[in-house]
Every structure is written in structure tokens, then in C-alpha cells.
Length: 225
Image (tube, rainbow, N blue to C red; front, side):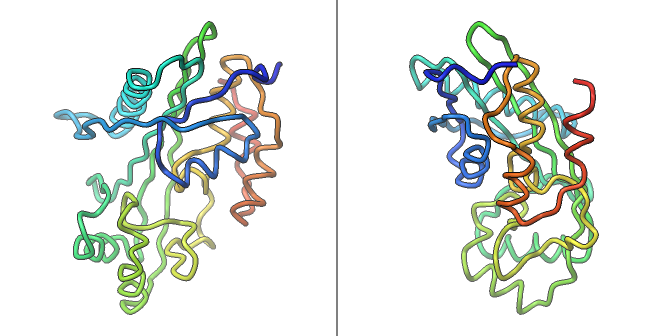
């Protein structure tokens, strides 16, 4: 299975620095071109369908504003707790409320990936992770919110954020990169559907970058597409 042609560059339809850091681990060449879209769910829309629709819409929006795209990648990540979809907090007060609600409980993170490569077709993948949170102290929560770190993150937290570490990693066994916003092994699966392999050892690079000892990548990469 070939690598991407050397002159082919992936356009990442996301301004997220986390997604850019993760995509760089694959070794694929990329640049960024993103465009804002409405992200409200439709009546009765299930989270998986919402995430997939938004990922595809982001890809299409980027194609509209950035000319001469040969390969486009978009993703959408949802944080779901007690049946509610948690977006980015509107400010510190809402961030506090979200983190209090998530504390010492488990929630779900769903990311949909949409890829389109000229003359090769389209592929989508969905990754879902169950995320247990620590019973963090109130002063930890308040200091984290005051740092400003949660204000640009769905659910008001980052699994990778130093100091706070809100996720109970001792009881977490799913995809770490998914919670960051780009499940890399699912990205590899989607690219394989289109006939391409990454230049780098993606599971190895991801584990080195995150410091998380992933045990599920053989299942993801070895399962049928």
C-alpha cells in the first residue's frame, strides 16, 4: 500500500492546535484551512450522526474557501454527559459548572473523521471513548479555570493539560488521542480505505507523544474496515 504522493498535501480543516500536533505525528504533510460552520444539532439527531455530519460539513466548508485542495481532512469531537452535549464553555462560570458536573463521573467522547482525496474517494470513521474523571478538589478546579486552559475545549477540559490532569487514567482504557480531538488509529483506518499508509509508526508516535500506554491500537488497526 503506497504512501501519499510526495507532492500531495493534506489540508486540515481545523484551527485546533491539538489536532495539528496529533496529525504531525503521522508524518503526512499538511497545512491548515478552516472555516466556521453552525454546530447545532438537528431535532432528534443522535450524537454519532451529528459528529459525522459536522465533520463532513467542515470539510466541505474548507473546500469552498481554500482553492486547489487535493486532500481534505476534517474532524468533529463531541463530549456527552448525562445525555447532554457539552460544547466549549461560554466563560469561566460555565467552565466551572461543566467541570463540577463531570467530576468523579464518566462521560463519552465521540469524534468523527471525514477525509476526501481527489481521484481516490471519501472515507469516514467514528471513534467513541468512555472517559472517567478524577474526584478533583474544588481548589484544583478553580485554579484550572483561572488559567484559561479550559475555555477553548469542549467539556471545559483537556486530557493532556499539565498540572490538572482531570481524567482518571488508572481507569481509562480507550483512545487518548480521541479525547484530544483526533483519534489517530481511526485516521489510519480511514486512509487505508483510500489506499494509503502513513510514513510513521503512528501508535508508537502517539504513545511517545502522550505518555499513554495504549492497549487498544491492535484492535483498531487489525479490525475489518
